Image (cartoon, rainbow, N blue to C red; front, side, top):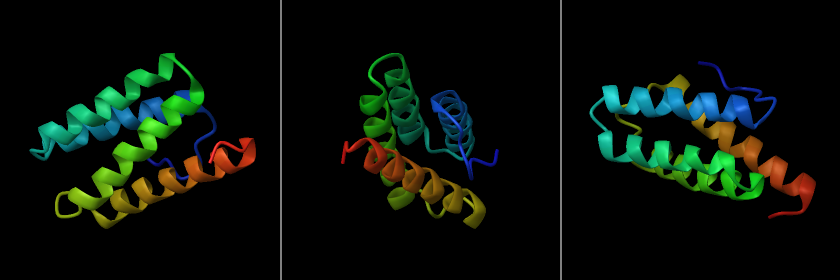
Length: 93
C-alpha cells in the first residue's frame, strides 16, 4: 500500500488496517493491536482520530524499524507528516 498522498480519513483508515495486518504478520502483535485501536477513533472526532493515529505511528516508527522495510518506514513518516500538515491547516496543533 502506498500512502504517499492520502486524500481523506477513509484512505487513512485503509492504511491503518493494512499496517496492522503487516505488523501482525511480522510478529509485532502488540503494536498491531495499538494501530487497530487507533483506527477505531475514525468514528468519532476527526481531530481525535488524527491525534491517536499520529501517536501510534510515531511509536511504530520508533519501535518497528527492524521489522519494516525502508519503504514502509518512509510511508509511516509520510503519513505522520501529512497529519501534521492537516493539523496546521485547521489550527489544531
